Image 1 (cartoon, one colour):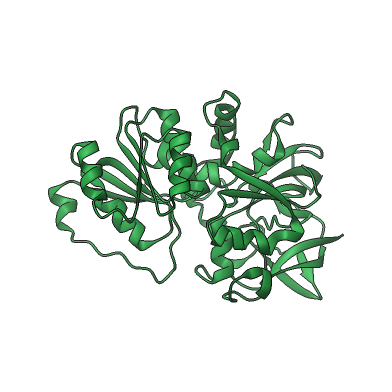
Image 2 (cartoon, rainbow, N blue to C red; image 1 turned 180 degrees about the vertical axis):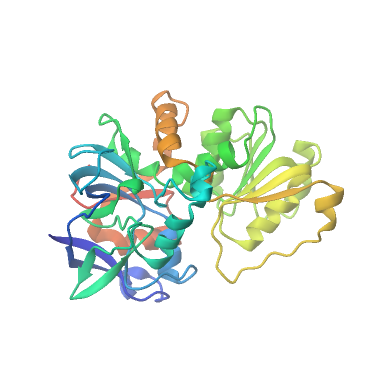
Length: 378
């Protein structure tokens, strides 16, 4: 079938993107789903820093690539062997296909799925196939999803069925921002009520972490960012304290509030400097977690001595250490119960044609989460 899809052919083009136009909305051929694959009508797709990092070159991807990894949609067709979803089902995408059989999956650590990671790195689906052809050239899939498009063919292991009564614009947020941010505090950190928690970097994922910490009952919850408006939103979402990252006294202030440093400090900015700050805000016996995706050439240096003398822990968190089939419905249930007001992360919706403008807004930190609507409504 012929569809429109957002194609990135060259990374690192100059800003603003409305002028250099790194993303082309092209007519492509989308081939039919094969065994264990699904055709999804994309109804809503979130604009995320992971896509921006492919555009600006921070995280190189095989090119050309059809971008978009945070999305919701409606199943149109299923390939041979698919019984987990059916045409008409509403679904949320997972940006890592979960094979369910590798050692990591067998241990319940789906976010470390080896075959899924290898497929994403190669620009294919879990099957090894590519389904997008533009002007006779195969186009790589982004994170097994390629959701900035009218339709997408994905592995059945990249979709999670959801209730049809959930607004599909809100549903899209659960595919990355909520899964990564809430998962980082609930699964990676395993924060308990009363644990002091710092979140450094208040984009969509970082603010989702604030929501998760509030839902758990962490206290105090300290938000850190470079932009005052984001600190205001963090307070609105339940942060007990908020500081500019540029405050020269921030370490002393946080240590005074937490009586020596936070038990958990989560870095969500995708910056080595932000991670360094999160590490310095962590207390003795505490844990510093990074879920931000920094430039591949970034480095962070520490002395190993505090790791021993202070029994410090450093952890990474990918996809919020989630099992999508378990955690996406779990977080949606919390949203419906009023415990995770993720709708407050939504900055607005736009047509797919505004995609380059949307990435300019994201790059300038003017928005939290924008949703693109490939069909004009969701």
